[in-house]
Structures are given as C-alpha cells and as structure tokens.
Image 1 (cartoon, rainbow, N blue to C red):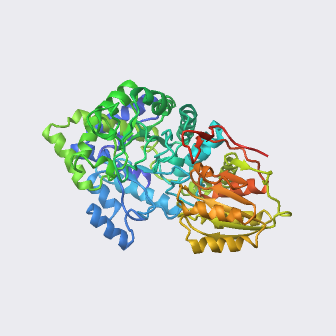
Image 2: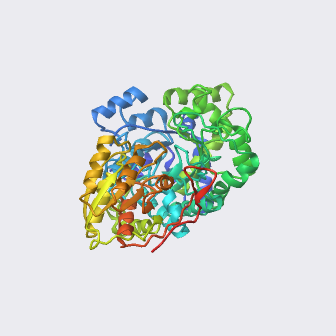
Image 3: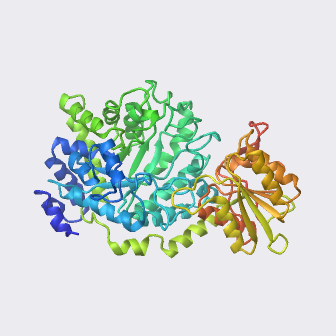
Length: 594
C-alpha cells in the first residue's frame, strides 16, 4: 500500500491543508479550506452515498463488474469514485461487499486509495446498516449483538452503550465509519411490518435513554451513529420499502411520542440522523414524504430541535420516496428540504446530474450545497479520516470477533430473554427429568452471518447443556402433513421446544403449537421475532420472547430454558389479547423469573 503521505500528495495542493495540526480550531478550519478549493462537480459528489458491487475496489468478480456496468455505468468502485467523486459508499451483503473482516478492510482501503488519488482527493465516508438483531450486513466472525428490542427488554443503558462501543470498534477496524443505527422509532403498532423488533420498544422515555446510550458508545469508538427514521416510523402498518406510509399522529402526539428519542439523540451528540419516507400530515400538509419536506427537515429538525449535524436520507430507491416525484426530482427536493447526504439513488447518474443542473440553473443555490458539504467534511474530520483514512491490518485480527466482545454479547443476551408464561412451573427444564427434547418450529432465513437455522441453533445449544435435542424444522407455514410429522416426533420426546415467528390468527404455526400441546408433552414456545406471539398460545405451559433469531439470542434462550441462566428481561412493548386487542394481556415491564 502506498504511504498515506504519498497518496495525499496526489491531492494537488490539498496535502498542506490536511497536515494542519489537531486542535479543535484547526479541525474547524480544515473543512472550510477544503470546501473553498472544490469544484462544483466535486461538491455534488460529496452529498451522494452509493452502493457498488464487489469485494474489491479494483478487481471485483465478473458478475459484480456486470452488475456495476448495468446499474452504475462503471466497472469498479474505483471507477465510480473517479467519475462521480462520491462522498460516501454503503456496504451491503447482497452487493458482495462483506465476505469477511479482512476482505472488508481491504475493500475499505481500496476505496480510500482510489478516492485520495484523484485531484483534490478526499477520504470516503463508508457506511452500512449494522443494527444487530434482525438487520446486519457484516456477519461472523464479527461479533453479533442482540437487537434493539432485546436491548429494550434488558433495559440497561450500560449494555446499550457497550454494544455501541464494541460494535463500533469492530466497524472502525474494517474501515466502516458511519453506522445507520440506532433505530429511534417508538414501536407502538404491533402490526408494523418494517420496524418491530428493530425498535427498543413502545415507551418513548425508555427508547430515548437507550438510543442516547448506544449513540454515545459508537461516538466513543470513533464511528458516526445515525438515529433513524425521523420524524418517527413506529406507528405504521405499511413498509416504506414497498409503499407510502401515513402517520396519523397529531402534533401533540408526535411531541410526546415520536420526538422524544430524537431529542435525546441530539442531546447525546449523535453525528447523523436519517429521514423517513413517510407522510405526517400534522407536521406538513403538502403530501410530501418527510425526506422531501422542508417544514419537517429544516423547520422542525434544524430550527425547532436545533440539530446541525449530518442528515442522511433513507435509501432513495425505496417506494415511499418515489410515489410522488421522479428520480430526477427527488435528490434536488431532498437537498432543498435540508438533508445533506443522498443515500443510494436508484440511478446515480440521473440523480447526480439533476443536482448539478439544479445548481447551474439556480434552483438550488451553491451556498445551500456548500452547507451540506461542509457538514459532511466536518464529520469526516471529527472521525479522523483526514489523518488516518486507512485500516491497520493488525486491528482487524485483534478487534473483530475478539473473545471479550463475544463474551460481552452473550452476557447482554442473557439479560434480555423474557419469560412470559411458566405454568407449574415447567421451567427450567432438567436433563434428568426431560432428557429428550424435540426442537420444532419456524426457520426463517437467518440474519446475515449467523449460523442458523433457529431450530438447529436451539437444538445444538440444548445438547451442549446436557439434553438429547433433535431439530425438526417445520417452517413459518407448516402443512398438515408437516404438523402431523411433528406430532408423531413429539411422542418420542419428553418435552417440545417450538420456535414461532410472527404468528397471526389464521397462522398454521398456531395449529402446530396447539396440536403439539394436545399430545400431553410439555411445550415451551420461543417467540424468535415479535413477542406478541404469546397471545396466540393459551394452551402452552411456558413461553419465552427472544426478540430475534440470531445465534446469540437463541443460545441465551436455551440457557434460560435449561436453567443455566435466569430470565431477566422485561417486556419493552405491551402484548394485547388476541381475542380483544383493546385489552392488555401483558403490560410493558412484565417478565417472570426463577
């Protein structure tokens, strides 16, 4: 790798500016000096964050070259940066960016090298969605922590802060400096298809405390946290990836519910906030999504809440932001609304040229563009990208998946598992009294990088704890034949553990659990996503909420089932009766112990 000084020297006069010492005053001055030397085209590039296919910045696989040519008009990440002078790149598993930690670090270094070698080259802000739980882009051997709702069940600010600090160290070691986490949405709608367990819970004050703590942890690790999705995506039954959600909260409801965690994030010094592609008529009557709303982004977020950090859009290829305007108008309107970073437009060339033309035509002033570029440069400066843009190879081996990080994740998970039903009491089970276990149930596609499937992970963990556990995957929609097979298998078991996944009234999973319970064998239900499943199972003798189907949460649930750990989690959301949703079956804060 060329030395940092060699690479920065290619920056045609920028090196002297980048070498300015590290006082706060110098850090404030440096972004302004850089901005003054940038061309209009370079400024436009800085506000875009794009996907790119491939494990390497210069030598991706042929299939990824083909995908880049088809979608972006270039062959590689290096060519993308040369053409558009991008300020940011986002990593995805499906784009083949995240094979393993060493490869990710090499990709990050290749991206930085390609950008810094351009005239007046600047470091790139590399980002990803590493929420943990249900949404992760970087998998094993990186440490995977419990997701937000599990952290909400644990209720520990210290655990939330530790998650941010340790996960942030691992991201930074791989060259990822901006994480689109934590989720600050207050999940008050059990039918929410897009947030759910990605939220810390339904109590605004509790969510606020954990959002602030996690953001503080990431900041301590030198990674920019991103509170999302402003002004609040927690009360919707529509997924903004595929539709256009409408939030019907009054202004007063928004103030007391949705705004609380974002205020806390701002007070904690969160480096960036992400907008939501949602319609909130009480905040803006225009019919525009919040991402494109000047009354919301500038009027409320900037002026009322006083936020002057980086504002990034949710992905611009999502349906929620594309229903009213074309892909050429969306980026321009977002900048006019007050955002700074334009995330993953579906057609980068169209979006980039639209912004350039808007400035050239006077629709968007260069002064307005400069304000966003300056915020982005200030963030890069604060994160140390001008001084140390590259990854230290030893840091990857020493930091990513470190034993102490893995142990911390296991410990946090043990403090989140929530016991909701325990008649008898049935739990904890003992290998002496219930040596043979059948582990049946749902096997949803495993979140990125965990071993999965859930029944296999549970069975393996219970076997390690002294049981003879057999896994039988029955899926999220078991057929009558599959259910009959599970019932037959239960006859040879002393107890049954069944994993459930977002069970509805007419769900075949419900039939499975009922028929397993009818065998007379003790049944332990483990809700591996939303905790609301317990309301559908009046006949089970024990029910746990694990909040996600990642290995760390499933292993913790197994330890609780076996009595190797005590259940400590408390519901962070209310569970309502299945037959009368106006009645609360288990309130926030409910949870049994041994």
